Amino acid sequence: PSKRTVLIENGVLKSYLSDRIGAKQVEMERTGSARRESYKFAPVSRMRNTFIDNGKDSFDDMIASVDFGLFAKKMGGGSVNPATGEFNFAVQEGYAIRKGKIAEPVRGATLIGKGFEVLPRISMIGNDLELAAGMCGASSGWVPTTVGQPSLKIDSILVGGR
Image 1 (cartoon, rainbow, N blue to C red):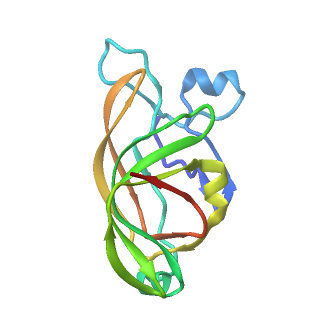
Image 2: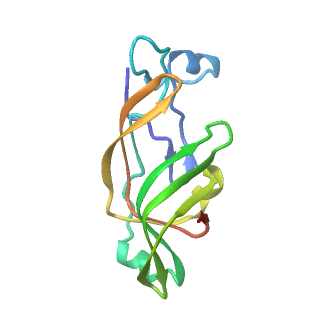
């Protein structure tokens, strides 16, 4: 059966998304995470309601703590390679941060990295969690998801762009 699965807690990997077959292969408890678009696809472990939980930091405190950086207000499409952890996500709406203040708009930015390298660089977690509906595509088709996170301060991440 499906249940709440805490993946990371206080910076420590606690569990994985698993289905009956995957859990048996690696001898772990299954988390009921098998999903598929329809009967035409074989089910695989997939996200469903995935979010980073609230922290204690305010958005204003995060911005004030940055001398120079990027405020990625709205994210767009992207991709993740599950085998390597590499990701890239387009910033649909972004602003420069200069001396603790939100400044001019930034266009064409992309956040690039590897999950296992970026996660330890999260130094502040906001108290402003927001959830949104989305879709996730994989070998088992497209499935609806809910995703979300509070504001995050990441001390270092590669920003690419045009």
